[in-house]
Image 1 (cartoon, helix red, strand yellow):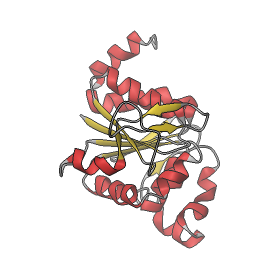
Image 2 (spheres, one colour):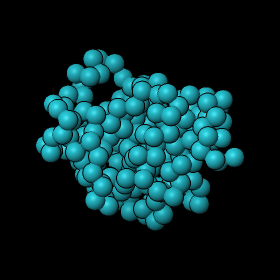
Image 3 (cartoon, one colour):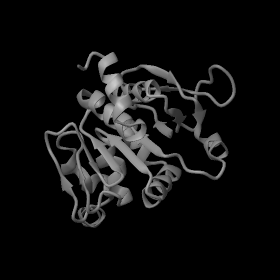
Length: 210
């Protein structure tokens, strides 16, 4: 499957790289997309260094300005938004990503997000309405900040149910995760969804999860 991982400055490194690593072990086509307008170029055109919330820099596969050309009119099977601050807030400010998330959800594609991103990014798109979801502890209490107002937050997350103390929640085509400590469980759920249980079991064994 084709999976796009969006990286903005201040992303949570564990959440981003654990998911990319496990999906690539599972043989999935994963492309990391830099959302910063400009970056330190490394390794040629179309690549930019994005620095995470703990000062770890990674080279994205492609910049956002070349991403639409890369898609060539198609949609990926999965998009993933790691959390971290201010990474999640930087993701939430990108209009292309806002529209793209809604388009993916409406098309039945998998939308995945962890930690701060479910509350900071997904909530304001409205795709959490009517769904069960999770996020970094207590950020579910700050939805009015990210959605614009208490009334907007209530409308955008109408009939949704936030679940505490779970590593991840998969509801319909939306996968949300709790935080960096649950990144491996979250990543393995994505492996299961994209590559199947047999490959997921093989990776669990090779990673000494069993």
